[in-house]
Amino acid sequence: MTIKWRSSILPPVIAFVVVISLWQFGIALLGTPAYLFPKPTDVFKAATENGPALLESVTTTAIESVLGFLLSIVVGVLGAIVLALSKPIEKSVYPYAIVLQTVPIVAIAPLIVIWFGSGMNAIVCITFLVCFFPILSNTLIGLNSTDQGLKNLFHLYSASPWQTMWSLRIPAAFPYIVAGLKISCTLSVIGSIVGEYVAGVGGGKGGLGYAITFAAMRLQTPYLFACGLAASVLGIVFFLIVNALSKRLLGSWHESEMKVEK
Image (tube, rainbow, N blue to C red; front, side):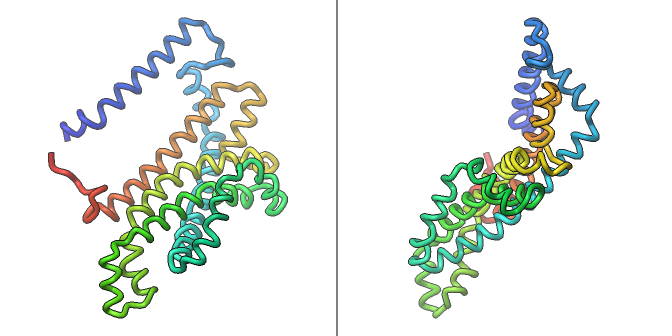
């Protein structure tokens, strides 16, 4: 425990203390007003003074992020399985998935608001679009990377395509699926906040994007920083949850998560 503390936890803690100290005393020495660049103490004060509102915004954004993320997992994994089962379908459909990924989300967000209305539905849809492609792409790569010798073995035993998919290709693709989840879980927070910028302002009860917009309009810079840091913490929490899931799924058999004795 002591060695782990010294090697993995202590360095980032020291870096955090140094950065916060430089930020606090640097701004104080320069005499920069809080509305331009607040000190950490100003941010902490704004967060505590607006605690209930900030917590409500974080909760709203977390719900939107989780819903969009879960929807992207279901559609992304199932879509990748369908594409992997048929090369003609993959060649026909996958390029359009790439095209969808290249379209700036802010360009189609107003259309989504028109189609789904402002508020939760549109925000979850935007979050889904942001998270969808990394999961689809990684899962498809994983399904197509199955060892050819093992596929030949399943073929010799007359396994159907679905049996090969369920018993061989999907388990072999787990590391790739988890890699896609790690990318998308943090993107889900970004997608929700972008969605709230477009669709949440008119929704009345908004999340962090809504709070950031209002704080910027009122020049409440310390609270704006608090909202940004809260979004960052939310993304870190999501990543740690997915990382724990990854260790549980892969820790006993895959090199990426197995403990290496030093």
